[in-house]
Image 1 (cartoon, rainbow, N blue to C red):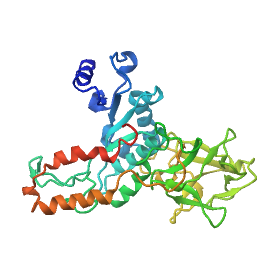
Image 2 (cartoon, rainbow, N blue to C red):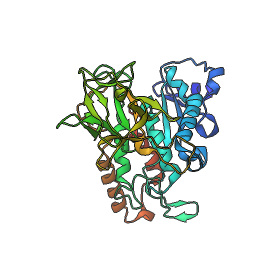
Image 3 (cartoon, rainbow, N blue to C red):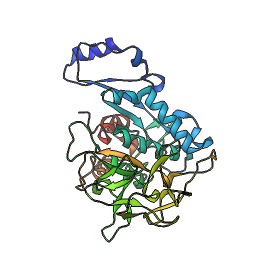
Image 4 (cartoon, rainbow, N blue to C red):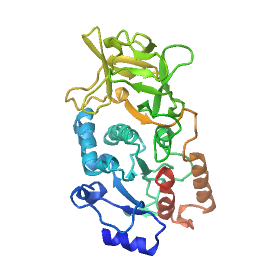
Length: 363
């Protein structure tokens, strides 16, 4: 690997060098014991792959809280440790079956998005293409992981695009200091964040670009930064609200479960409840889900991640204009008079554009 990196650097000293991991590009732990010795610096980037099937069918056969905790710890041990050492690390491949029927992928994605938000990782999505000339012996093979549909005209799953939009810009990122460090409360299932409603003290989910700054205190209160207001609850099934009396157990939020994505508090020092959402995306509290080994239980609505951010809540735009991408797909498809006569290789098209779907802070 060192020889290869030096060869690339010698050929072009102005490009980044991307170093892949072992075992299908998920394991970079060998660097702990055998650090790289290179003649250049400040241009090395590490990459990793992470899919639902990376861990077989674990998401189907296991409890999502436990599986998320285990695979996230494995990822941090094998690759994520590089972030703590200050190295650029990006997930150069992730993706899911966008038909929405794959339970393994669906559960994995909730955990993946929470982890990527927490670590502020850069990523590239597999894949843009909706179909192939020929794959696995099938003409016009339908790519169910593709953002575009089979004929490259529309998005295959627009709700998925909405979910990942919050992660298209860095929460922190190199040199990104729009405001002082604070927390946002990210909800992986929707790709939204907890916002204060303009009409009162209650809260709901909304775009993370509009999120206000939260502070998670040593006393485990979630405070609206710059105010005396904190998140609290009164009864199970009721809405979480902002209040000013923040010393009781009904305003002391703890992260629980193996996933570390349940935000729990006690009501009356007896009843434990967790932050949740209702059918209108209002923030409520309800009984904590899936804390045992039940593999049939899915806690997705109750997963929240406290994410460090220095991004100002200014309603900024996402990194990629998906309308432009679908317009390009339509143009390629229509001008080619059918996919069999395309002048552009779909595979090469995917390879050339996949990095547009992330690499937000690497270059």
